[in-house]
Image 1: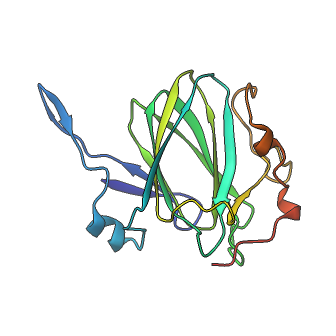
Image 2: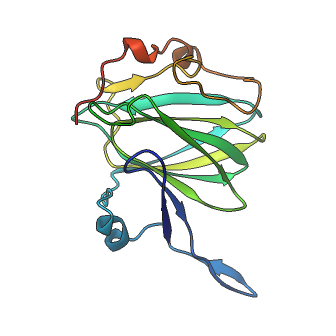
Length: 182
């Protein structure tokens, strides 16, 4: 695997190193030693999937507060998404800033989201399926969200938004959120 640091401390684009032949390829998605060498989460306690039928669907921004703050490792298995992380960590020099990249089934790249960051994405194709590894179990008493259209974030979604949940529409703006103390 190759780890490309992103502009938010602790966030990475993870690229698979495929070993192939006429049959196809083989690649590692996770190696405890390689993740530990970078100080990243090495214990995944929950694995989830999501499916979005429509192009332009928006999900997020989601996060969990301590003690259930979580790292995430995300891969797009089918389709393509515009993936975004927002730094919500108290005292972080990049608090309120975001980083975005495209994840798709062609490149098979992943994104590592550090604890204290919110995650969201927009589907760029129809029929998108994602795989998420989580370092903490879901706990509704510690979940949080950030509004996807907050002007303070200045996120440029690449497509018109076709679907967004009522819950995600009700999330607060950055100015109304308390930073995450890790």
